[in-house]
Image (cartoon, rainbow, N blue to C red):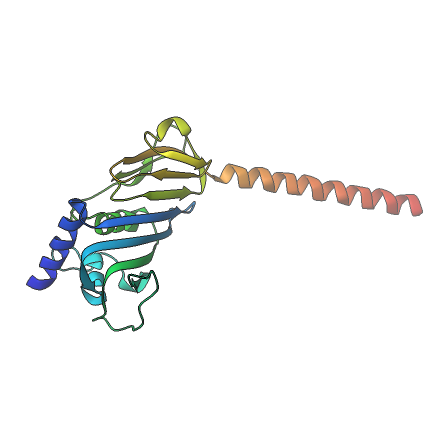
Length: 216
């Protein structure tokens, strides 16, 4: 238990101090589930087992992230995947892919990957203003180049130092505050689409009815 706590704290310190570089791609779906892909470059070799433990456990040694949702691949100096699935395989570079089910799991993941206190409650996605489809995305300071793609439209005026790649994707450099507002693709679009579909079907039905009447 003490060794695990030490590993968690060591990884957090490396990330917080900027000694470990993290490049991230974060996908956020309309229900706030999604996927986090990251490349972690550590200054010292670390094993898969130790890295998994540090990422998925909080400082009390309790599971904060479902280990079944996290995949890790060791990458060698040549950029190729190292062979072997053993938890003892060591590398300075790791590729991480993790799925999260909601904004709470995203907050826990941000604490692990960005090297923050995993026991602190972090609000990453929360409502903004009176529009029920408007939200704030607040991930704190980027540990490395970070790309966020949301299921909606990002408000350009809110991205700060970020670079808007397109309406739904923004990129932040290491050290930049990841903070912006976005309008989620809400149910109104579905309702409008459904209404239009009904109108079209009704029109087609009316045309068929008139044709049948004309042939009688």
